[in-house]
Image (cartoon, rainbow, N blue to C red):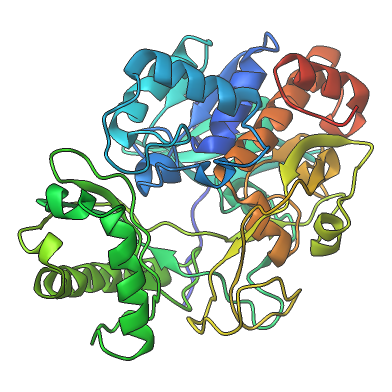
Length: 450
């Protein structure tokens, strides 16, 4: 059965030059770069804080994979990292004492001021409801508020939702999941524990790493008795007070990150897995004998979702060929990080190509890199919409590389700078001078090909 919604008038809450939808890494990069173009910028975020998966899913060790390599963070991400450290310093964490990590609670506070100082207007608790399209342009983005639907009118819009929500509402074609069957990677609800035995965990090297290795061995041998299919057990920081700030274990497989029933199933199942793991860990690891669950991430986090169809589709072959595009807006190291959507972690984790059946995990082992072209940020079919973050135009395997937090911020920064040029020159983003965009990005600290 279907109902017809009656026609109604919607108040325009705000008119801005550039509207950024989504306050994760891509949205942060986009809003900062857009504001620096001299245009009015508003950022909409569905949660009550910025940071995306860093703060919402406790993924605090964002760029840990760069540690010990020749690759360095650049652009707005590096600026954020440096300013955060200057304000909050380096904590005395016992583990993960790498430069590439944050404390998510402090980061929430930092990001508010980071964007406000740049002149970005932030609107929290703003869910995208729909868009109004006229003459091949999005005229307004409709958000759902406690007072009903409201409209935000903008000259250019940047979709940084991670799910391509604005693009989807506008009817932009997209792909989702792996080519084999359309399945996405699993959703995860990370959590924190307190009361770990710090002395025991630090007596002989990295105790958390030892626990993770033992867990993996026991799981493969069928000894854990746990119902979650997740085989590995990544941990985050260990504080002197005995808090483990990130336990990346509970995963729910074969769910659609854009479907409310799938999201609900994932949240409920993952919380069950957390309780199972808590009871298992207390019994099986003396270092965890006195732990308590100190917090559970506010919502399930996903590694992939919709990928819009753009003017160019970045592929696995582009990455393997170390492609240098004329319209490059970022350089990124060759890395793949993809969990098996069905939970079957077959193979050795090496890159198997499109339609793979297992997982892919290839960390940085050398200086190979690739570039991301500006055209991946431009959806087919609309004149004033850009997309940034994990939902740009890419195949499923390439997405497992560009979904990295610093990569999302780089594509966001490029989209924000491009929208600024389009506004200042009264043209559409597709028609901007890419060389001018690249010059702006270089001046903002982004590393690009010579």
